[in-house]
Length: 201
Ligand SMILES: Cc1ncc(COP(=O)(O)OP(=O)(O)O)c(N)n1
Ligand SMILES: Cc1ncsc1CCOP(=O)(O)O
Ligand SMILES: [Mg+2]
Image (cartoon, rainbow, N blue to C red; front, side, top):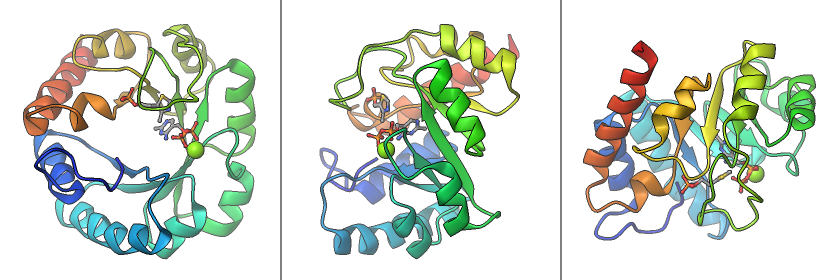
């Protein structure tokens, strides 16, 4: 999630609703706001996550993750390599890396990924440079080869989350399926229940 307002909710309020609905991880993904604002609001978001017992991640920026004492960082193929992030973060923090192909997954694993964010599974309006949707085949291929946790990302919602889990993913990462909904708590709850049901089947 970014730091902009979400309808009648602030980012902080939205995060609280999402967690109340069953979200198990929050990622601060802010591409545009001034760094000072990111740090100020990031502290509030981190405190909320600590209060509610949910891991707090920072997207892209290892420096921001360190300053905010985040639980981890998520880096893509064009961001700081996982190996370099590890040198800065130490062994106690979690490093997630994106992959959209098997080659990218191999590189991510060589770079010490603690989990993989695989996508875009479906088309998405949230990330302009996400590229073509890849479907679920890569999730299956990755989870057959490695035991590292995998989350699918990109165009995932309540309607299609089940097939992501059926393909082998351990979870789903979403933006619009919660942030763009009129009732984010309800949206998170429905999504979390869908994923939990898929785990059991
Ligand atoms: C959980 C998760 N998976 C993938 C991404 C995408 O990261 P990246 O490819 O670096 O793209 P940006 O999010 O930085 O635009 C992610 N953020 N989280
Ligand atoms: C950050 C990111 N990385 C791959 S797709 C994507 C956007 C996910 O947003 P949405 O859940 O709204 O499709
Ligand atoms: Mg990135």
